Length: 85
View 1: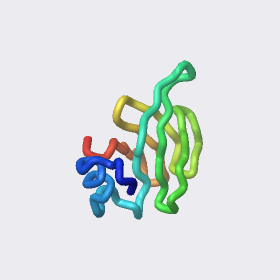
View 2 (view 1 turned 30 degrees about the horizontal axis):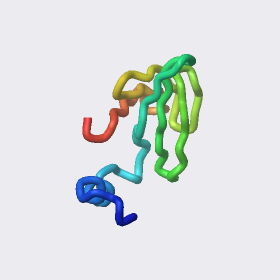
View 3 (view 1 turned 180 degrees about the vertical axis):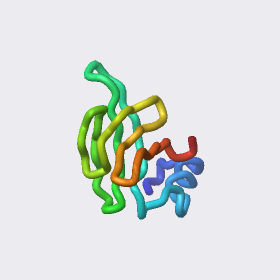
View 4 (view 1 turned 90 degrees about the horizontal axis):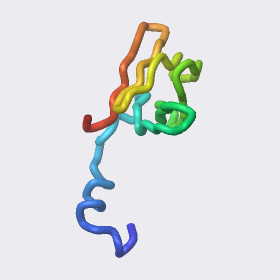
């Protein structure tokens, strides 16, 4: 980290096991003129940008909300929420 990083940011950036890296997680929600989309991190480490109606490697995207995404997967629906939410 740079010498300009404040103590709070440095501590937050080094929290161990803050998110489960062995499963798909929601890491961000975006809103723009084209509607809502979400950033998902797959267990492989790949990052996907998805929007409602997309068929992705994470599953079919049913909805993107302010702090969550709803996926249809082979085992049924799954709701992913932002970490710490």
